[in-house]
Each structure stands twice: as C-alpha cells, then as structure tokens.
Image (cartoon, rainbow, N blue to C red; front, side, top):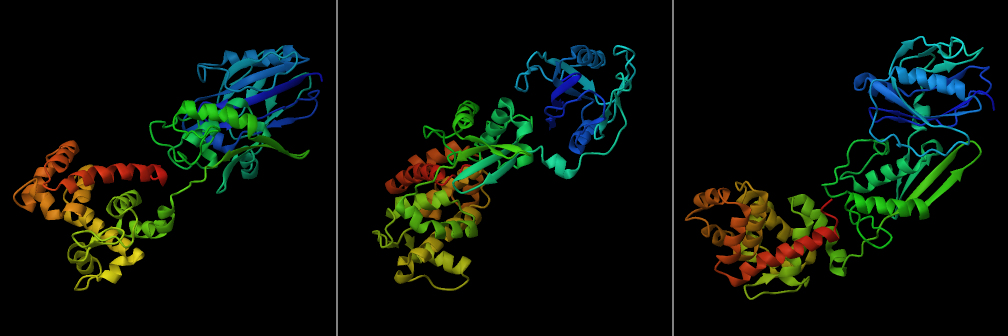
Amino acid sequence: MKNQIRIASIILASGGLLAVTALAFAQMQEPVQIQVSTAVQASLQANVPTGAIRAIHHEAAPHTTLALANTLLAQTTQPLIDNPQVMDEPSVKNSTPLIADVPTSIDASANIENDYSSKLTRPGELISAQSTDMVNLFTTPITPMSADQELSLQPVIIWYDHEIIIEYPQALVTPQILKRSIARLLLSPDKLAAEELLSLKPIKSQQVPALYLKVRDQNGKAIRYPADAYAYVDYLIKHQAEEVGDDQERFTLVHIPITKRHLPNPVQAYQHWVQAYSERFKVSQDIVFAIMEVESAFNPKAVSKSEALGLMQVQAHTAGKDVYELVDRKQGMPGRAELFDPQNNIRMGVAYFGLLNHDYLKSVSNPKSKEMLAISSYNGGFSTVLKLFGKNAEEALAHINRLHPQQVYRILRYDHPSDETRNYLDKVMHAKSRYTAMLDLNV
C-alpha cells in the first residue's frame, strides 16, 4: 500500500501508555485521526514537558516517513529513557524503526519535501492528517478520547478463588508489557487495581508481596523477589496465555493459578472463632494459634497442674477473673464447664492476651518488647514478669522502655525464675512464625 505509515506505539515520559497499532494512512486521501487520551493529557500538562513516539515504521514510501521523523528529531531535547527497546512490536517487512522524542506542543513549519508543513496539537486533542501533495500534514484539533475508548486501552484483572485472570486488549500485547505488568502484580505489596498494572514506577520489592504464598511458580516455589517473578512470568506467557475474541476485538488472557492452602485440621476447626475474637480484641491470629498449640496441643479438655483449663489453658482465678471483671463487666470467675467449651475458652484466652498487650503493658513503647512481655506474662504471670525489671510497676515499665528488644528478650529468656516460662517464650515465638506463614499474615 503506497504512502502507508505505521505508528507502533506512543509512550509518554510520565509513564502513561497509549498503544496505537497498525495506524494506516491509506493513499493519504482522507483525513485520519489519532486520539490521545485525557489521562495522557493530564499527566503531560502536570508533570512532563516531552513525550515520545517509539518505533515509527515506514513502508513503500520511506521518504515521507523519514522526512517526518527527521522533523520530529530536530525538535527533540532529551531521550525518554536509556533503553529504546521498550516495546517488541511485530516486525514489518522492509521497515526501519526510528526513535524520536516529541515535545508536547510543536508549532513549527518545516520543509518535509515539497514544502510540506507539520503541526502537532495539544495532548488530549485529535490530530487530523490528510494529504493533498502532503500539505498541512497535521492540523485540525477535534475532540478528546471518550471514557469508553480510554478504558478499552487498559487491561482488566479478574479475581477468582482459584486463579487470577488478566485480560489485555490486543493493542497492548507485547512481551515487555506482559512481563512488566504481570511481574508488578506478583511483587506488589498491595492488591493492585487494573489501572496500576501499566505504571512505570519502581516496584517496592523490599516489601513482602501481597500474593506471597498465595501464588507459587510451576515448581511450587513462593514468588518473593523480582528474579522469581520474571522467571514465572516467562512460564505463564508460554503455558497460561490464550487469545480470545472475534473479528471486531481480540484479547489475550493470562491465567495465574492461586495456591489453595491446606491448613492442619485443628486450625480449620477453630479458625472461625480465632479470627472473630482476634479482630474483636486486636490480637494477631498467629499468636493465638501458637499459644493454643504450646499450651494444650489443641486439646479442648486439657488440664494443667495449676488448674489451667482448655485449649488456651485459662486459669479461672487469674485470667478468667480479669476477663469477667474488665471485659464482661461482671463479678466472679468462669466455671470449669465454661472453660472446657472451645469457643468460650478461645474468647477468654484471646481477651486476656488483649488485656495484657493493650492495657497492662500499654506504656511499653516498643511493639516487639510488648509482644514478648505479653507472651511471658500469659504463661508466668504479669507481676512475676514485671519484677524482673524493677521493684514496682512504674519503675519496671520505665526500665523496659530504656532497653532494646533484644535486651528484653535476654532477661525474659534467661532471668525468669520459671524454667517453663523461659522455654515457653521461644516455643511460642517459633510457633508464631509458622502460623504467620501458614495463614499468610505477613502480607
């Protein structure tokens, strides 16, 4: 086809992306319109003085395209990014890619063979191109892109219990876009919205991904770091991608399987109550399960030598009495039947740990120190723990706040008078780390 120009893609320096594929000026007899989205317009007006046209290809009439590209290059001040190979577009036979950066507003006359003139309008407008001997190549602003048109150039994320599907309009399907956007989804510390997939902002890979342990690669390995993500993305593109659509629209779907968690039976049995009471009393679920495991090995009928009862080994005359008075606002203490009931035992155990953490140890400033003190107090008694740090509560708490968490740990681990409590701290902390991973609580 004569006088055909193919603009493979437009990438803007602000990170906005508008892919316009296979744009043909057929015979250059009728006006052809290029649309620039309002989102692109806003980002350019607010942040970036220049945009860029990448990979301009020419066919059959190379002198026309080369002349246009040379004009754009003449008005360029700086490259957009160091690596020009941003996009891998399908190769065009007998075509030569050119790289050019274009100011957001160009109002210049240039000799483009036979005194052709060119003009680019403001972003957000339509650029009309027509040719009668290629005179007034770019003129006539029209209307901004509609919201529907703008959305059509964005991927869509569909979340299911068993998988995540990303739907890409075919105009966006290049290896770089697929790799970058899927890796961003896998590594993001927060659940991404679809409009964030194409962002060019750095990924916060130092933080644990929101999908960590929920998505695993083909070998069962959790996706934690960029190398893990990009290796898995290559696999997904090869084995989990499909093209769908009709003659009007084509899309590429990428399927990302979600790993189904296999929780131990005791966790499945009590998770509903643990979750509910953990939220109510602001205690992390992993600590609750860790205490339950270490205290009773998940035996709802467990009884200790000190008459601690049930799953969380609640003593009626200490922890049970405090919960009655400070949480339930009533006198007395729970009976044995009440503490052997799994749901109520969990409620009272979690409530008591909440009292330790949020009331009794409220003035402890470091959260790590506070957690270790609460764990030791749950097993060995609050007053006994405070005596390790001072003669009275005020002096002890002030001393604790002057110590590093590691110093607090050493005192609890080696100076507590009870062998059971000294070992208890390590046991609970180790169990907690397992439940943190098991329940995906580190994301």
